[in-house]
Each structure stands twice: as C-alpha cells, then as structure tokens.
Amino acid sequence: QSALTQPASVSGSPGQSITISCTGTSSDVGGYNYVSWYQQHPGKAPKLMIYDVSNRPSGVSNRFSGSKSGNTASLTISGLQAEDEADYYCSSYTSSSTPDVVFGGGTKLTVL
Amino acid sequence: QVQLQESGPGLVKPSETLSLTCAVSGYSISSGYYWGWIRQPPGKGLEWIGSIYHSGSTYYNPSLKSRVTISVDTSKNQFSLKLSSVTAADTAVYYCASLRPDYGPNDFDYWGQGTLVTVSS
Image (tube, rainbow over all chains, first blue to last red; front, side):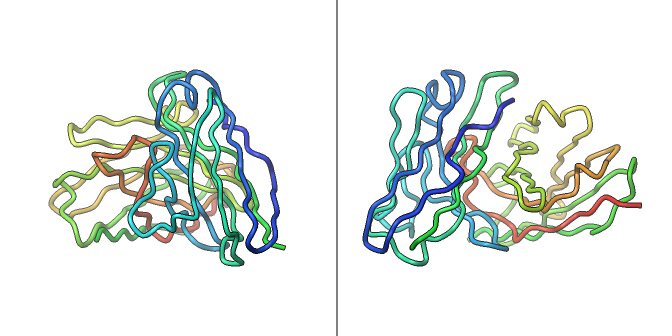
C-alpha cells in the first residue's frame, strides 16, 4: 500500500492562489471519486477541508476547492491568508489490496 | 456535534499490546456514523490504521492487519484500538475519528485531539 505522492512544500504570498497536487494510480485517485484533503496546524488534529474530490464540509471557506484529472487530484487555495499556513494531506479510497484508505505524504504550505 | 476523546497509556513496552479507547460524546455510537483510527509518527505523515462499520465489518491497513483489532462498545458509547507486538516504529500520535455514512470511506470529519503513545522499555 503506497502513499499518494504530494510535493513536500509549496509557498505563496498573501492574496495569491496556490495548488497542491496529489498523484496516485487507477486503483485509488483515478478509480474513485473518493479523494479528500486535510489541513493540519502544528500540534493539532487534522481538519477535513474537501471530501469526495470537490465538496466542502459546512464551515470550510470557499477559498478552498478540489478537483481531479486522471490519477491526479488537486487542492487549490485562493486569496491566500496567513492562517492557511499548515500541512495539507490528501487521502483516497483504494482497492489495490483489501479495500482501504491511503494518505499522501503531506505538503507544507508556507505563506510568505 | 460529535466529540471524540482518546485515552490510554502513554508508554508501552516493546512486544506488548497497545490499547486505546475513544469516548464518543454528543452522539450515540450506534446511530449512523462509522469510526476509525489514524496515527502519525513524530514529524511524519498520517497513516490510516483501520475503520469499523455498523455491520461490525472492519477494514485494516494491510501493513498492520495481523496486529490490529478495532471494536465498538455500544454500552459505553466508545470504540477501541488494540495493536499487538509493538515496536519503536509504532511510536506515534494516535487519533480516533468519525466517518459520516453519506461521505466516502476516507472522509474523517470529526477527530479527537490525539494521544501520544511511546514504545520504549
């Protein structure tokens, strides 16, 4: 069960937009509309930001959006704010072995 | 709103069994949600441990499957994790989390604050 591939770090200035990619295979990201994104601030529990590729849970800012093309999913944050600085993890359902869940390695977002 | 709280020993000896409990409040554990455990080694990423569904069906990370048991205790409104034969590689912050039945199997919407478990003699 391999982790999904994310860039180790991305950065952007306040007000800009950034995109974080999450690459998997046809057995996970590409095969199902079950991609989610989590935000984690230091010392805190992860928070669900996007579920089922592009849906936002209640209370999550519409500055966060998700999409998918083939085996790669993306999280876009527009109008970057200082509070967005955090680690971001993607996750997918996978059928590569027993049906289960796999996470990406995480991406550190720095707001310059 | 669902609230989750992990509890259990913060220190476990190598080869012993790690046991954690997740107390659920604000919601009846048998009402609709599903439940899961995720861990995070210090300074590293998230790793799914397993999930349990209403039917009692459990799904475990293949890399941990031989050592993991997740169960639900409806009388105490809590669910539990047992991980046997632990080594230093099992040192991590352990999170319990909930899964909405109308979301996907990887969409953990509520999380506990996490508990650090260190494996050391």
